[in-house]
Image 1 (cartoon, helix red, strand yellow):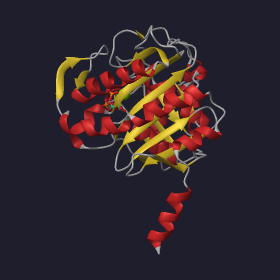
Image 2 (tube, helix red, strand yellow; image 1 turned 180 degrees about the vertical axis):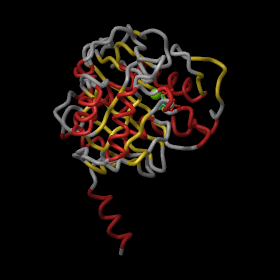
Image 3 (cartoon, helix red, strand yellow; image 1 turned 60 degrees about the horizontal axis):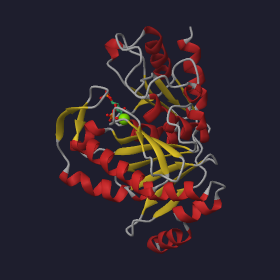
Length: 310
Ligand code: AHM
Ligand code: MG
């Protein structure tokens, strides 16, 4: 009986293609989203043969995993051959990549493999993407036309916004995405995750964490931003990687991590802040710019800004 109900539910689920048909987004944006989402299959398959950590470091000075460079190279070629992407900013490449042969005008920002320090542990990691529509990488996050992430966990899921709310899909055995939730709203929940060593936290950040712990917030930090954010999206609360003593910009990057995740959070009724202002309003000064990040339910982000501003 349970099986029959599940089968019936699967049959009425919208596919990604059908969902995009119901949206007002441009046809070539839908095509670009579809081709990016399809890359979950080769990326997932590549984990088996790319378990090592390279000796190379990316432009932010972080040790690269084989999956970082594999995903970056793979997705870069996908953008090039799509003909839809004019420019790319990637966490794993020093400079903006231009595609002069493209007929499309999209600009992509991406973290090709977020949470890569967890690859050998088989915890959930993912790919984070933001899409602008005017060929320009260096602009405010609020100008994004779409943002999405894939998580390679027990299920392969796609979380997507085209500026009409947030939808979550899961991949079936035929590698098709089926809609799990077409109108995701972030509740005011009580999960929290804070990066950085406690000894390096600034006083006001420590006071904020103490305040939420007193209110019953529960710690859930895996080391994969995309996965830690996803549980906040579902259950409510917040994820943060704060400014630290000696590291005032924190760890995470404005364009590749904060913009796409912040755009999704805002579309689900949540918020993203650097502690004082909406990160989607911040003009980028450099491609690999880091920023403190607080992202989650709007009420707790407001509470945080009150405590951090003193
Ligand atoms: P990455 O993009 O190279 O994986 O780095 C970003 C990751 C985030 O996913 C995660 O939240 C954070 O770095 C974890 O950092 P730490 O190991 O300092 O806790
Ligand atoms: Mg990352």
